[in-house]
Image 1: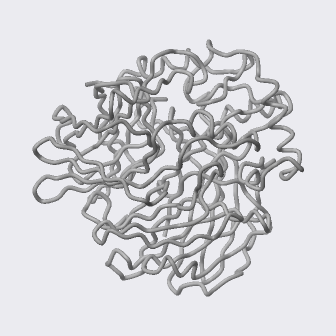
Image 2 (image 1 turned 180 degrees about the vertical axis):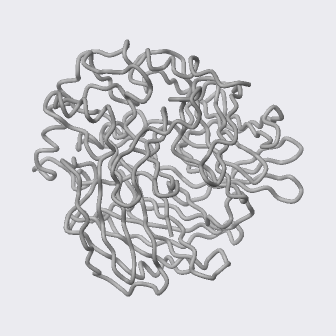
Length: 496
């Protein structure tokens, strides 16, 4: 099916037409939170969603614990929102802040940190107005918004992928934004083909064993399936119909399949913000659609009980055709609706239960099973050497508890052994997603480091940690500290 830009970009008209007056009470509360990251009423975790007022020049990090592993060299790029509040109006949802790209560079045992905002049309216009006016996932926006296309609302704040001497800042609803890998300066939105300009390219690309990249762009009951060559040139893009119009933040893939998990949080309206369009229908269950990479018209639907999720782990296929993948699953979308608002306001209680790690099994005979573990977890990551292939390990954040948002630890789940190896920093740390970094010359799955940052709430600083994947419970083998705290980010990629 040929992609239709018109059908995929119709959402831009709704963005500009369905706006209203700013939510003044929420904006005032958000500005109070930004004025001082720890006013008397604010919980300590409010530091994790504080505003950053400008770019952060490259600075040396200080080694405060352990020894730097020999052979660890490369760059951890991470993306996430970092500007929510302006005097004339504020973002009211965690997912709607301006994207800040971070680069943690490690070489010769030394580490540096720098960060630059993605210089999007949204950010430029709102900087001129000194107000957040653009509608988004959970922010209503107002009539001052300038939205003529998806990319006019693009916050470039969610994910990142490497592309030669560039990195691409990724968002759910529009184009990748090119940034310079060396200095993080902003280039232009990436157009993979002229007739596909502005079509959604989501924040969770999947890498195939042959080096190609697969991605999805969802719009209601359709999705565009992207396939890129290793050099990031477009090989193919096809639109596929979906059995339901589900919210889709992530997808997964084996070496032979694209897998779309259609949860029962479905689009049933056209109000703004986007979260207002979605209704939770758990009685409808969850559908899993498996597509053949060689022929996307060949598909199979599996049925599971209803659950909510943001993130999936890499999938793999067994020799008999059984497909397995993991998911950070919870009972409902209360965090997405209300919890992410609490984080930006910096006060209140985050509702709902934290996500737990589960393994989904799709059998060749059409049966589907979901086995939920006791491991509280989010942001599942796997060994990139095994992308789309059989594996046993999943690294994930851990330690989140009911009523207190954000993770405090790291764990690695061994699906073959059925056990978890975990380390918890305590409630004074907010732990972010970690990535697998294979040790030079090694091939075993546990022959890797796990590298990722945290926000040290007690010290008021960002830290960068290195764990040995074979001994996570021993704690970090090395920790660097910055002289400032950046807010918690979403997703990252390692360039070694």
